[in-house]
Image 1: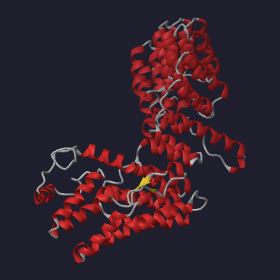
Image 2 (image 1 turned 30 degrees about the vertical axis):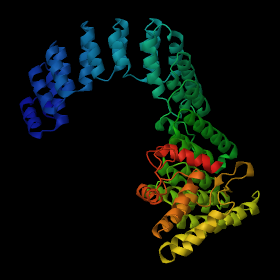
Image 3 (image 1 turned 180 degrees about the vertical axis):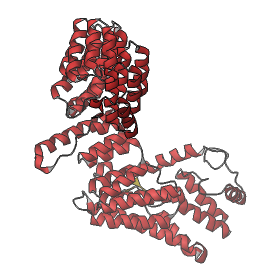
Image 4 (image 1 turned 180 degrees about the horizontal axis):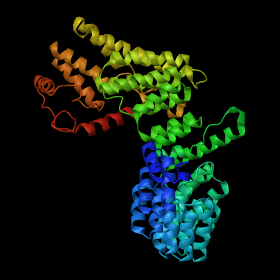
Length: 548
């Protein structure tokens, strides 16, 4: 109404008081139509209409002011208008930049292609929609700029086309293409086309990049082929790679065929890890495949005793218990240390849980011999042999069972008598002397008694019930203390005649006193009692004499 009356002053006063943005824009447009540019700019600025401010600046050919307004306001519409103005003025480089700022990449691409500004074209086509990316890729492909073409085809979703170019020019621009193809392959996942994955893998195999090929095979679910690549081309299988090579578990609804295939893959993966001496990984994969026996064998090769014990304990399987116990016997369980004691307990525990009576009898037999040979502890040896006797009695389907039990009973009887003699050494020396004399007079006291632990008579290990040197030593000391020096001397000579090395059994001072008592000179060499063979030679000599 105020406009029709021509009351412009009143109208302007009303608009300014109202402070309404839309009304302000209307008034600015009205002022602009009347040629009042300064008033229009003031009102556009008050209303926050930067697009109109840019338009007015462009109309006034004030491009620097328009550029400043776009930079300050970040108005996409203002940037687009300025870009069209700059294009009209022939300022192509700046027009491309402002088209890009406005988000109209199609116009930026259009100008870049029109004026062959390829650097700008690649920069903005990467940000454009897929159809424009593919179109620009064709442009670069036509110009022979294959790297840019591959990059844009990939961005545009045309992976097969990108791969075609990689395969076609891979020999001529190898480094760049490999890098691009690596980027493509790293972006592939389980949803990728099997054909795409297969072609990438084939390309890497062809050019010797086997680990990349293997990982692509994993992506494509071709686990067997990936494992074969690792095996044939000596790709080290790390724990991370081993997990990637492990097929996922599927529901029972998928049916058993895939389960069998998964097991076959795991077994092959375990075999490859074993060949690479990755025994821990091989053990893990054999376990996942259900082959616990082979899993433990790999663990045994690793020499990780703590894990061997743990694995056997949690497996609760007879064969695993026996394998673990056999392995532990190969370690130092005879030294008498705390670790050795723990090993002994574990060996007995595993054989017991496996109900492996025959191997357990053999272990007790060996334990008894160790107590005699190393520590002269006949009491512990006797207890161990009694345990061995019980286990032999429980054993089934054992060759020559009765013969071996009889042999073991004979040893137990002899050792029991000797233990009694040692107990009587202080309380009843005469009884001790009678027992030892009776033992030494036995025609078979030095005869070897077959061990209780081997499967066939041809492979029995020889065992002595006692070390007769111990019996002689007790008698020598008894007669010497009783003042029977000549009897003691006679016993020492008997030991020499039987080729028994003296010094492990008799003290040097005792031997010297006995020889002085009978007026004989103690031999310096030849009997091992004075400056004789060293311990190692003595041990070898004793072993030879035992076998004779």
